[in-house]
Image (cartoon, rainbow, N blue to C red; front, side, top):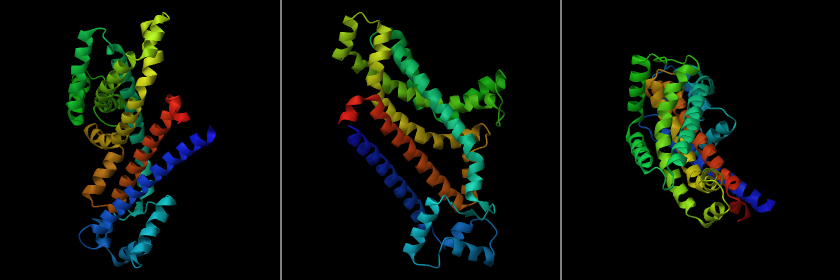
Length: 311
């Protein structure tokens, strides 16, 4: 039993590494394909002196064959060396490391809120109970999914910060400043996940094992939470993994709306300043997070559904 399970885990980890390699290679090739000289692309709007150009040529091995340049780039990434920002005159890992905690805190909090709200909405409206509540919930979820994230943020800011004064308008001043940005990111996620989870719960509630549980006198709430919910989680886990990967992109916008520190500020400054080493590092980091989250979602299948462990 352990060998098939080990092979399944190894296969999923290998697939994740291939996706990460493809993403980093695409980002590197995009740098080489940029118009003009590669040194010009790397130096960006920073100081441009013969000494800095010589440093860039040495660091990126630009005086060596293309294959050697590429392999040296992959080697440095594998060692955790993200290069140097010649615009900021600092190591890229240091620049990103200072902001990473703020963005990950926002993304993880938003993901947790989104999943909890989706489970609450879906379990309260699944089946044939309370049709009016189901219609109201479906309408609200459709609005949340269809509304741009920045618009949700502006509405929340207007109501809860400007009018009611319950939360800070901008900045990173503790837990209170995290609430509105996290809710802004969580609401569209909750709307989409609730629709998927409710459909899966509806199908699970029609399965024979649910009829058996009901015939034993099990309460409807227990049938829903103990039996049907577990079977309905697989498609939700798939989508949750993908949504968490997209949270980093959403966090960039939300951090701008709420004036929070994080990768959004770094990415915007890097793009406007043509700081390619930082842009490449952000792309690589985003791909790594996406791969890690989706690999974790794949491995979660093995915990949720025992049939997959046996197959």
